[in-house]
Image 1 (cartoon, rainbow, N blue to C red):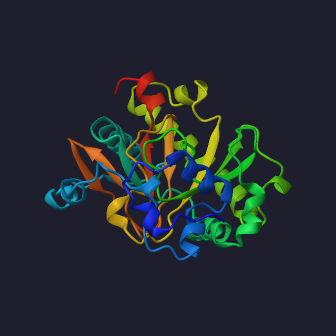
Image 2 (cartoon, one colour):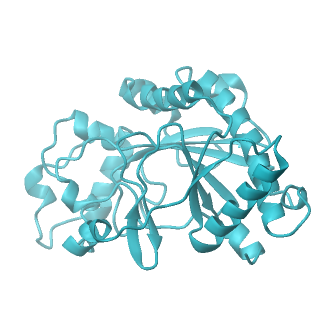
Image 3 (cartoon, rainbow, N blue to C red):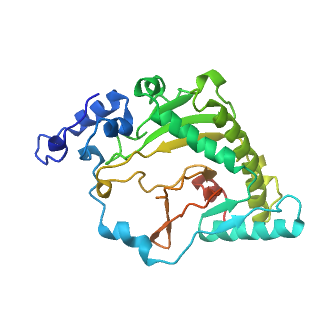
Length: 292
């Protein structure tokens, strides 16, 4: 593995070759975790952002806003409660585009095992992970660092694995053994819960309960798992750049470390982890298709 030294990382001279640094990093197939395992003490220049300010880092300390948390208990068997939840989902989708859900039917044990499975994958021996390192879209399961590595102005401090689990799931042998069983199980649970959410969103919009599913909103499921290794200079980079999700609905499972933020009324707000909760993001395709 090729690792850029600290002196080279912070050299602002005209000798810096960004493309060379990107290719060396990519060719190592070790990801950001490989840099950390190598013992770096300085963030490589390809990760350093010029747009970070103290205002960016401190915004969330100055607001009292809190992302909505919606309890789905009783949604299937209590008509009155179902209507209350539908109204809450509509309000959160209209005003925030984000909300957290609890009592969603996916057990805590499944959620925890999914997080553990992701950690097992990224923390296994690099030579084992390299089998799955790819940038080609035809790879059924692929691991990489920064899908936009060669086009983004800054690289993010994270590694990612990606798998398209529906409508045409990969064969079990195409999935890493350390993640295989729980990925299949978690996918089934999320698909079930996603169908429930699409029905509620349809009703919240005054449509028939199966409207969004009939549009095909619930047919596909892509699973992305991000891993954020410890950073020696976290003030210089981000784990994830600001973005919107180009899908219908994103279901996000975060661990207890936190760090997730959403943009609300021109302020970046923390989304504190809630035990057993899932974060729901109304994606670009659903926003483009419908007016709340």
